[in-house]
Length: 162
Length: 383
Image (tube, rainbow over the protein chains, first blue to last red):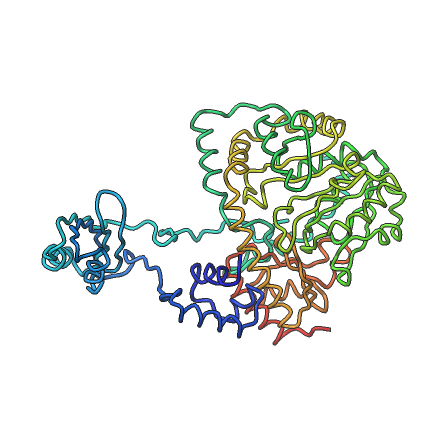
């Protein structure tokens, strides 16, 4: 694995590592790690650093819905035109063009089911190219971005073993 | 009640006392654990579950399921080892059983087995149980804990009957290259030593590929190789290992095996078949994580002034603490709640060193090393 790939792999596992610890793990100089990270950010390879949060454990309501979206294209309108318009809404946390029964998979986040419903019906559905929306409210999350939720911290290994 | 002299002759394990101290304490971070912190790859676990659901819980052939022996035969070809599944492979209950069977099949009372020091703690007792004697052959920090033909000659191993090897090594993490092994192999051929080669960490080598001494010219016929699923496939509790060797050696080992273990756990054998068939990616991911932690740990020890040679295999670092390793380990445990194993537990040559397992998550590893650094800076003088 080249240095860039290895660095990205490590950051995806844990973006909170200090550059000194990353350098130790990759056997690189700390300054070289800092330069490489800066390059990857400038090139737009690294788009941001976020925590994976189990919102179910946090007080206060937060509702997520997966919305299937079908659209109709014409000579002047492409998928990228529609996606650019939808992506601008702060309520949309994820937007992907997918193959299969529908065109876009949209993840929408709101403070309540009512908020999310109103957003879909008043902001997304009226877009001229949108022909159908199907909204699935998320009831519980068990795994997100490769991380399983729930308590998996038990280590029942012996303190010492051969 | 009467107890056999051979058992009485074995002193209690050197880690027992530390274990008892740690048991009484809270918030101990342990770097004393010789097993992966990863779970067995899920595909292997589902194979075990499936075998139970289908009621596949009867004995298997003494030598192990043929399907598994075939997979093992294919698996070990990556190290240029070619063994016949019918006659030259034995599935055992952990590599530990394979070591015991081989020793009991080779060693007569009064025979001598040369054992490099420091070494895995089971080798000497196993030879003692068989009525044999061991001859310690020192390896040193200066030589990166590599065994040399000169050290064998100096220790008088030319008179020994067998040589026990373990590379990549527990506790040092040392590896041996093909040319280094060739010198040892020449010595064994010249002095007619059987080689018992524990290669349980063969899949955990970081900078280059593993070489088995059995793959060198003239060595196959005098070598038994041990390996297993505990370390590389994170299957310690499933207790499954295997031995490779000439048909007569495997037949002899199977004779002991069939009267003691009969056959290895069937559920574990089903898991192992799947582990070999479809878990290479999971194993590679674990190896990558171990490699990163290895570099991190070695670099931290060197930065804090505890000289640490570049271990290139297994999941252990073996830093030099510049003083009494037992005292270091006990004070570190009591004062900073970090558990590691003093090097002397693994025999002469281990004194002054510490065995540090990095089979622990990065968060805990970082915290443990911060605590060790504090201890070294405030309470320990490196001589």
